[in-house]
Image (cartoon, rainbow, N blue to C red):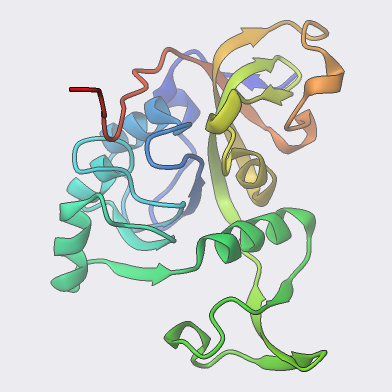
Length: 229
C-alpha cells in the first residue's frame, strides 16, 4: 500500500524550495488542481516547473505564477496567461519553450531511463542553438536530452490503494508519462478504491510509479467555454 494522505497540505509537505516539479494536464484538463492549491498555500518558492502550459491567470499553475513561486518554466504553450507574459518580458521568469511532441518525448524518455534521443523537430530554428545534430538517412536530427523531476503531480479518475491509476478520456494527456518521470509521484484521484477493485486490464499507470495518493473533489474549470448563440 502507498502513503494515503488525508489532506492536500500533507501530500505536498515534502516539496521544498528549489524543487523541480512535473505537473500533469493540458490547459485546465486533467490538472491536479487541489495539489496546486496546496502548493500555493504552502508558499514554496524558486520552483522549476515542467508542464505543457502554465494554467490561466486565476487557476492551475497560474496561481503559483501570481505568487512568484516559479523560477523557471519548461513547457510548450503559454498563450492563455497574461501574468506569464508579463513576467517573461520583465525578466522575472526564465522560460524554456519546447515543441509539444518533443516535450512529451523528453518526459517519456526520462521515465523510461533513456538519457537522450534524436528528433527532426526544431532543426534550423533557435531551439537547435548549442545542441548536437546528426544526419540519419540524409536528414538532419537534433539531440534532445530527457527530463526528470524531483516530484511529479498527476490527476487521475480512479486509483486504488496499491497506487494503480486510471485516467478519464482526454484528461489522461501528459499524466501517465509525468507519473513515470518523477522521483516521487503524488497522485490526486477522484475516487480511491480498495486493492483489487480496479480491472487490471485497464490500468494506465502501474503502482510502481506512484508513492503518495490522495482523494479529492475537483472543480474542473473550463479554460474557454464555447456555446451556441
